[in-house]
Image 1 (cartoon, rainbow, N blue to C red):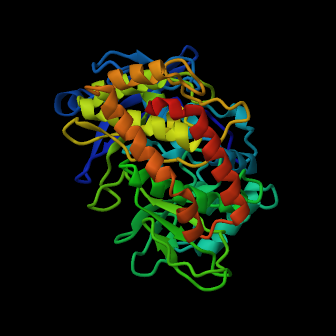
Image 2: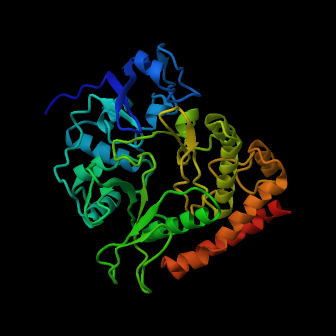
Image 3: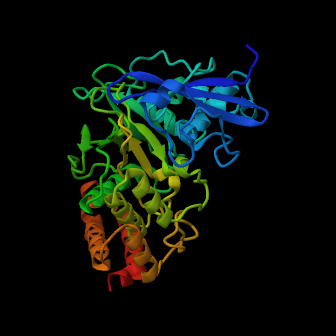
Length: 446
């Protein structure tokens, strides 16, 4: 067994939308911390990866010690969270490496080019799990993910680790699907395969095996409210009678009596239409503003302001307002700063990424992770009016029209949930809470 030696330097590359790869700069670390320096050629031809916190010069830029484990936010966004780190740590332990020895730079080296977004890192860690299986049955991958999540097994850990480069604590994988034969999938990119992020289920999740169908219902309602959402599918386990292949983009082909257990897959928005080498640089609000997503650290007011400034568009502020109010009335209180992202094209133009990780997610403390002009719950009319003004609504009535659209979409919860075969008890529980939230906040329409 080789001796573990921490990584001291990493070359950073960016994949462009046309597929070409360019060197961005270099990361280096010493006892004082982690430093980044842009490559001269990149400075001359391209654009700043993180305009708010990363100086666009050849000067050394030291990363803050917190909140990203000593990394700049833009590079920390390449790392997984929760589930992905769990799998990574298990691989390190298999090699006799204690996770506490592993630095954030080592984790970037492990990710290499398999993370979300356009950035990649070299040299790739020698400890990276080797997945020798070209094709992986979806049900096998899902079963293994569920068993690892529940602490029962570590089967096909290499495949899971290579596919676990996304955020969040829920078991998931980055997969590549044959659009003609959806049972054929790989955890590695191949020509003519489509890139998706798939979320598996577990009995130990808050909504159990209904997590996927409930999130699909919420995505459907968000789209009906005029919010941009990712393309999605629900994959039903092959053992679930009757046999159905999938439910696509908000429409269900499930038959009456179909169990609600299903795996939600969303098409990756960081990959362009020209194949898996076509990438858009992706940054979360958390990384952009060096915010701590693990605790309440930002207000929607700051989110709206930063979004409009970054994208140079008043309309983006209004879009963020609508998403914020959807989270309020939909009781999605897990609305932390990693759940909002931006995409940059080759010309340096930023845009808001689709609305993701939106589902029924009440907090035990009934507080949102992001505040509404200072309120973690039941914001006042004055507070929401302040948000609407920041979001560039000319009149309060225009913002109220957005709220009305949201409430109309959420009123379809029961119908959409039944169509997706959500259990009647779950429908009743969520319906009750949605009504309570409406009663708490209906004064916003007056």
